[in-house]
Length: 269
Ligand SMILES: [Zn+2]
Ligand SMILES: [Zn+2]
Image (cartoon, rainbow, N blue to C red; front, side, top):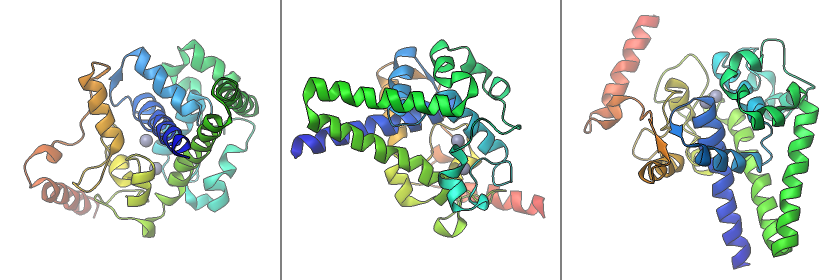
């Protein structure tokens, strides 16, 4: 049982970091630079949590930011809970307004990402991801036995649910709070922040999508950010976008943020 728990915990962290740092903060937002070794280790962690083709994920995510909480947002809760959680994935291909060649030219250069993308055919790229995910667990089973394989599978399936849940929960205003008044429904939700290793501070993220840090207040724990600082100290990551300057200026940080926010409000009015 202890072996199961340890393998589950290590797998959970690897898969979750694969999504938060790999798919999201690195590939989607380019909020830091990673050497190719770290990039592939992270992206593999995300892919083995059933996340699907990186190009597919990132094309959808960039469209989410661009069209947030409008009918063109692929998974806004305004489309209904089923569509927002799972329904949006069950299509044959991209909607007309999402063209990966245009929104993700940076990722199209990479032959591995291009192969996993399967020419934009969603059924094929999801099927390929499923087969490779199961094959990975089969190899663990054959090499180390059924318990590590089951722990790894369990971690992958649970981590898969987290960003799906985040897309829904963190866009329902009454379930969280805002540090910034924004033009979308993104909110900070503490328990998603914990489960998603720092990604639940979603109002902060929509305000500063280019920041590699998502937790802004002292209690907004952002495990992915701490891991990123560790990777930087090991020489694996650089050019980190630390987020707004206000966060690093003594204790007046949040008041400054608030002032900025009220200025925005008065401009809007
Ligand atoms: Zn969002
Ligand atoms: Zn994002």
